[in-house]
Length: 108
Length: 117
Image (tube, rainbow over all chains, first blue to last red; front, side, top):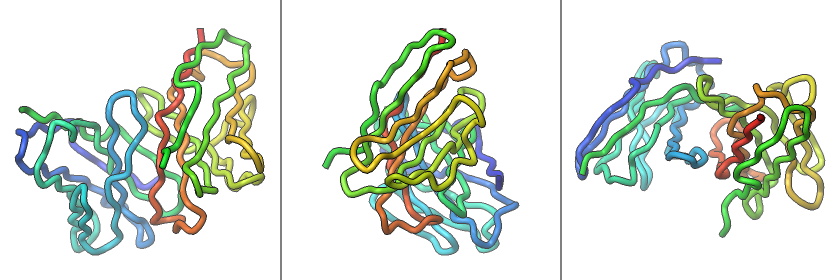
């Protein structure tokens, strides 16, 4: 499995942006970068994915480095409901695999 | 539009008993995936099914575990003769029939938390 590295935790204030980094130096040319998040006692929730270009959707933005060895998930204005564990994962088929992720805490 | 449904949400079994976990995919979805989440190991793929077919079971333990997705009804993950090491959260996900295998998002259910005494 291609490996990703994320910080264990990150704190933010409500209404401020959150930048979540992910390193994936062993990414292959066919790997997509996926982000999911998981609230306590719930199933993972899809956030965003990309291959080479930066991506935006209603939940977040994904900035992908030119060499694709790292990416950053951007939550533009954090709310209390964004407090969750965020997983960055590489996928070149349907087999998702999550590590420990980054625990995001949002302060009111 | 109901999401992925799983039941039961919590299941307690004694060692040696059988556990049956059910998953109803989102309406219109024909691809089902089962995952296991252990506290220290993260989320791991177990099996990928389409209606009446097992596409990939490379993540399933070789013994005691089986999965099916019949033409009618929910997908079932069955664990025979459970042991304490089977205690985990089991998640089901689904995706629509035209989703790209590499790029498609998967929609997860709330999970079944299995505790083996």
